[in-house]
Image 1: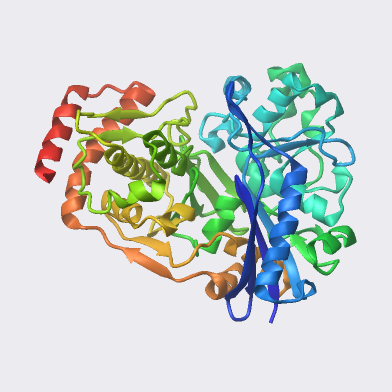
Image 2: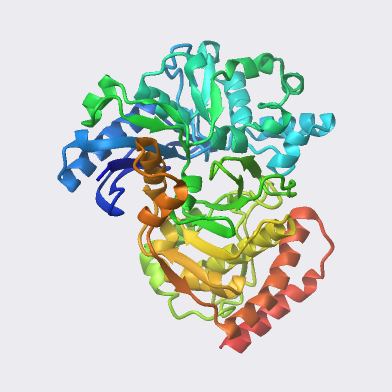
Amino acid sequence: MAIVAGVDFGTLSARVTLMDTEAGTQLGAGVASYPLKTRADDPHFATQAHADHMDALVTAMRGAIEAAGIDGREIAALACDTTGSSVVFVDDALRPVADYYLWCDHRAHREAAEITAAFRASGHEALDWCGGIYSHEWGYAKVLHFLRHNPAAAGMATALEHCDMVAATLSGVTRVADLKRSACGMGHKWMWNPRWGGLPPQEILATVDPRFEGINDRLGGEILSSEAIAGTLSSEWADRLGLAPGIPIPVGAFDAHWDSMGAGCQMGDIVNVVGTSTCVVALGPAGMATIPGVCGIVPGSVHPSFMGIEAGQSATGDVFDAIARRAGRGIADLSAAIAAYRPGQTGLLRVGWDNGDRTVLVRPDLGGITLGWSLQSTAADELFAAIEGMALHVRIILERMGEGGVPAERVINAGGVPQKNDVLNQVYANVLGRDILVPTRSPVGVGSCLFAGLAAGALASLEEAQARLCPPMRVFTPDPAAVAVYDRLHALFRDVYFAFGEGRPADLARVLPTLQAIRAEAS
């Protein structure tokens, strides 16, 4: 038996999962939270401290070991996934000079637009591989914002994704040249790709701002996929965590990508990792082309042997929570109220741009839309319409991915929300017109355990690891009558989505009467 530890750093907490790689069972888990620093005067501000992350890891690890009833020195490997692009700025000894710009820190709007303009003007293909627009959520934009606005910028030697910083800290790396950086992080958020020799051209970046002069030279280290080893656990951190020194730590990745693998993602699967936001993750064959509006196609980013494909929604669970908060009700209470809702019965059509659009428009400057309000509309109606709208948006994303040749034989709903919201899973099945598979237990942490098992030599391949460790599935089957209603709603949704988001011509005068007709039919 080999015991491995999988760590998932989410937006608000760190979770440690301990698994037996031979039996495929979870032995114990621990969770510890950390603060998210926000500002009432700046809704785009979201930061966290590296020390808070590491303190939470210690608490969660020790809690998991206690829950499992084992000696922590039995753990054979440790792997960590994190949010991203969550960027920390460090000195030449890899000590933070400021807090992380978290993935949901959206201050770098201007910087992202300038980077987009520079690469469009150059004609360089890097922009095509990240959907045609560089996002304010991504690394270079956040670094430039930091360099422009933070007095600590003078002490910055380099910047790291959270997954790379955690691995470096745990393994005692203190030099930029010795860093192992994640192909997942650098590919999806920093325009890295072997097609053009790695990072995007320095000469293009330098045209954006003189502060970018030499920036790529500062992003030192080696970029690797997650079958590679980032380092081994230092004595200091072994003592703090209660583990044995010297155990391997593989190169990390983003939480949604490893959650997808933990949910059993294989070639032909589309995985909706539905949580605070949604990441839509898939695998593609080598040599596939770019897909307009799909924000990342990167070799080895999800599975080392295939192209990793990422799309998504900038807010999902956050939208549901906001509706409940405005209503002064708990999300569980509000969710219970919609258990028997029928397709289209609310008369509402909701486009979930409350935090902008990540795919396929890649527009952070959009806001949420709800059409069809009446004097009888309730918060429960809005929540159900929001779930329908999220599913309708996913349908647009899957259609775009299909046009780009992404195979889609199965659709899996992973992440935290599907585990506790069967209404959402059934709506997705009806909107997409196909079975939705949902893991019977949370895959959070399982993906990290897969890669820890590989690093420990306890599992020979990711496929073997998935067969042993991934949970079985529940299946939600579409109802043909509901599918027919959602086909009509999807036609309306597409018109509204592209008319407001892209300026396409559409007969918007038909939207409200059709919503009312569908509502009447559902009564």
